[in-house]
Image (cartoon, rainbow, N blue to C red):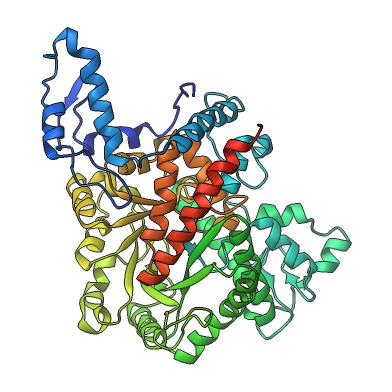
Length: 535
């Protein structure tokens, strides 16, 4: 691929280099940080150099003191060691596909000018969808999406099709109203009198489907605070639809079918609980479970699990958030996957969500997550942490100290190189959401995302979609496309990311092995299918 000019986000690059132990000179001013040694422990599903001695021998070179006759060989040896830190081994057939993937990337690359970002959002980059690379991402057996919120994993086209044809949907089109743009299900006590029938508004031209698409699309043109204001507005515009049971089932079913059709075998959905009422929380899960049971008939290997989440402040006090999580713990022993043999809980983890820098810090809940009651619940900790640009946000350390199994986002982990080493040693997985980070203003160019540092440092990383309906065309498909192009990923990278998503999931071990066995077969079939294209 040709080198792209990077025109934005240089502060993040310099910060990343500094935290990884680089010495940088800016405008004649030298900044030196103690170098960090290259770690020898790789994340799950990757290979490591044969021994620590390999590192010591290859890396025992001094700057400016390499024998000129050994220069090229020394450089190649160091690069090979770096590749071994993070990459999966490939067999001969995969090597062939790797060469083809490079051609796919080169062809897609030709669609862009040097100052463009690789990414597909709400109909943009239509030409990219006709490329072999996008087809590759569609067909790819992606494993799992471990970071999804409610039904926001539904592609926008499917969402719009449902609400366009579902009887009784109403919309607020009075621009002076606080809930302008909000959609409501068939009229009930929560529907304001000034909300009008969507079908009528569409038929008389008061609103167009393109207007609805615009109202529900996060473009990512401001800073993170501005983007979160837009994000919260969009969440409000869809929230009331879930008050209608049958409509909720329909939306959940469309979301899950989309994942299945795009070769995702597991989705772990974060469901926000705002009450300590067990019955209310059971009812919140019922439409999702009904949709899952329906989809499961057509896709018997597909699995759905829940991460019970509550809010870090905003509209929920700390006491109410803890009461909601306590309720989730209580009902977790009752809600089993009836489609599987044995007792497999559908609620597998706990989390706290909402905009991180505007809510309560994770440390405020440390006593709760450290308590015997919570730890003995058998539920994993999957914390939203590091979704921040603030220098004083140290929630990634709280997540480590509290025993997180995975961390949602972990964007600012690069600021803390010693904590990065702790994550690597403990095998804590980062749920990286590239399109979400871009659209919510945490960086202006995906080519500067720190995820590539995490991959090359041997941390366990997975790709996830977050709230795809507001940010992209196809959940996880577009994340892989963006990651492959912006980070110049190899087939070995892609393979590792897919397998990591299953190995890092909250499934019981027998279910995890079952899914891994299926994925291995699907991967081998995918490789052969790709190699047969054009023959």
